[in-house]
Length: 198
Image 1 (cartoon, rainbow, N blue to C red):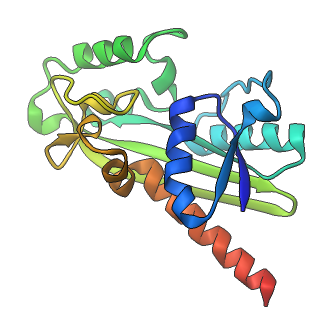
Image 2: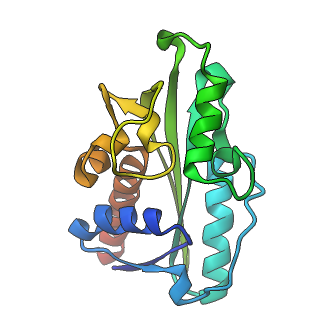
């Protein structure tokens, strides 16, 4: 199975490939097919933004497209940064600037109230095909960055005492929001393909 991943984020593309490759899925970047396509994320939910991106790539290419919209939802911030996770510290902010803003806003929040979750909404659109899945990973927002790997908020998002950045790619994939969502997506895609073969 081959899929176009509706993202310009090289880190997300790498995760998609790493998670789906053992399942026999080959991923292609949207840059290979529509390099100038830039989809404005106007949705108010992760699912809405994922659908916007998948629809745009499918319409531009006619090929089955999969999109992810994901972000960090922090309880002490009433769910922020949420769908604005990538733009939380401004349109062109770096990961370090977004983390700095998050930690500043949480500086007076006690450890037991620093709960949150990463959410990943996956949408796949193709000929006569629509699949939508969501994966969630509960965790704690740490007080400092730990680890060298990952991207985004990974250095401050702790699961069972370790940040996403302290995990290997495979360890992160096993527990992460995107890993969970992609496994649900793959299972649903397999169910539909098996039904079609009968």
